[in-house]
Image 1 (cartoon, rainbow, N blue to C red):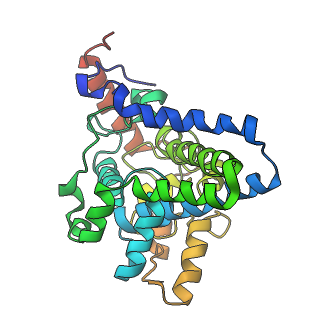
Image 2 (cartoon, one colour):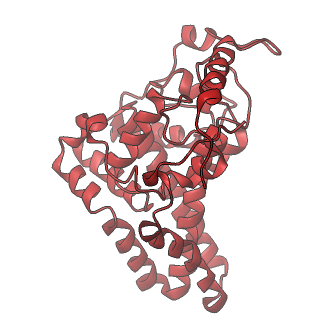
Length: 305
């Protein structure tokens, strides 16, 4: 159930900030004039999956959670690859994500689905409140000048990628490859915020509403095992068992074999066995959180116009 909040002025849509975001959603319509064939479909799919990997492996599992180790060059490549997704810099992304875990499902969480699907999916992005990088939350990574540069100039990588698609594949590559894949990538990433706390099943008792979903895991290369992740954030693998598909972890495992990354962490058996929810059993942590949120909702101001 969504809780109704009165939006502060800086939580309402900032239209001038949103124009580029809206134009990106309109741009794929260009395929009506340029055509869309197998070449464009292959380019779109490649750009989606490669950049999704950089978001999930780099922005999320490395920068936000430090769940594995990488040298400075590989670290920069992870940040650069993630920046091509046009989801701002690694410091901005990871800093806000750390805030999400500190306040998951409480009144301070940035993109809680309890504030409605629109807010959790995209509303928090198109307002002015969260435009700045929360440097205090990401000080360990903000000490690198190259990462600060990418954070300030986060539009440079996607612009260069779009230009490369135009030069190599023509206008159809730009509209059907770059723009279309970027829009799909946006929403493939955003569904973790908007759906992974309301759609799926819970294996572990946590103090939030995180859930596991195979469908979301397939869309996001493994991020859909969200209850696993909230239960044991240190793990590089979010699919805890062999049947839980986690493509991001598989790729990182291969990279570890050639020495590009190291220190991949997986949950030990004692962690896997603890805090399991029996089928049909009450989730005490979830119930306690629901009681707290219900009491806060009772005194929350009604949504304004």
